Amino acid sequence: MKKGVLLVLLLVVTGCAMAPGDGDAVALISVTPDHVVAGQSAQVTIEGLALEPTMYRNANCSGDSIEIDDEFQGAIGDNDLESMVWIDGQHLEATVPDDLPAGTYSVSIVDPRGRSAILEDAFTVLGAGDTDTDTDTDTDTATDCSDNLLDNPGAEDGDMSGWEVTENGGYGWASIVSTYAYEGDRYFGTSYEWCRRFQQIDLLSLGFSEEELDAQPEIRVSEWVGEIYAPDEYEVTVELLNGDQIVINNWTVATTTDGDATCTTADCFWDDDDWVEVSHVFTEYGAGLRYIRFSDGAVDTEWWLDWYGAVFDAAEVIICQ
Image 1: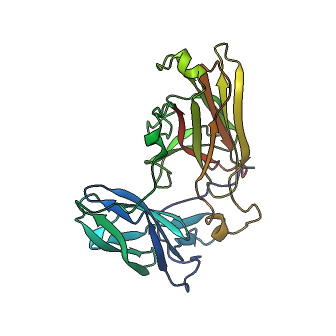
Image 2: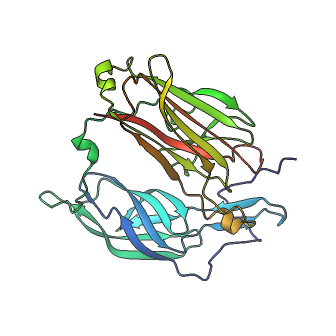
Image 3: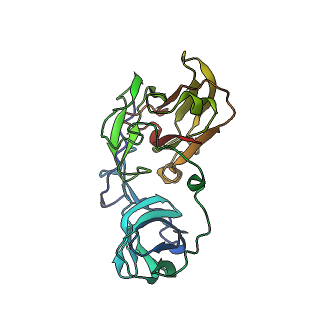
C-alpha cells in the first residue's frame, strides 16, 4: 500500500514545531568564490553553522506529513543577494548581483526563524586595473571542446523533449519546477516504479568527421543526481558505439543516492539531500566511434505517490580535441 504524499510546502503552521538547533548559534564561515570583476554576477556558496530550515508536523499534529520553511534572506553590503537557496545545514547558494561597484563587502543572512549572522569583508568586487586573485585556470581554454551534445539536459524545456523514454513507471518522468534544481529552475523527477530514458547522439550528423573521431578525442560525460527525502536507486550509463551501433566502450554507475537508510525522523531525512555529480572521461577507446548513447533512470524505493525518486539535472556530453 502506498504511503501518503509527503507535503513539502513553504508554509509556517502554528504548533507541532520540530525545528532543529533552536539553541545553536547561526554563524557564517566563508563565501566561495570570494570575488568577482565589476559588471559580472557570480553564483556563490555560503558556508556556515546551524543553517537549518524550520520544520513542522502537519496542521493536526499527526501522521507523517511535514511542512518546511527554508526561505533564507541574504545581503551583500546593503544589496540583496539574489536567488538564495538552502542546500543543507552548512551551505546556502546565492547570486551576487552584477551592478555592485568595486569594493569589499560584508555578507549577511537571516534564517526562517529571524536569526541573523554576518561575515565582515567576505566578498570583493574588483574594479578596472585590479588583479583577479583567482589563479585557477579553465582547462577547456587550452583544449578545443564542443558544446554540450545533449538536448534538454536539465529539464529547462519543461518536458521530455530530446529524450526517448523507455520506462515511465508510477507517475512517470516529469520536468519539475523547483528552487532545489541544481542548475536553472527545473530538474527531471522520477516516481515509485522505474523510469528510464536515453539519448543517442549521431556524431557525424553534428559535423564531426570520421578522421576526428578515429583520432579518439577525449569524451567527458557527467550528470548531477539529487535525493528527495530518502535514499533511492538510480543508474547512469554511457555507451560509445561504432557505425553499426555496436558498443566499443562503456561506463556505468548504478547505486543509491547518498543518505542514511536507518533514519526514521524528519530531522535527518532532510539533512542529506545534496546534489552529487557522477562523471567519467573516455580516452583510448579505439577507432570507429560514430554514436554516443546516454542513458539514465531511477526509482523511489519508499513507494510514495508523485515524484520522490532520485532526480537528475545538468547532464552533459562534450568532446575535447
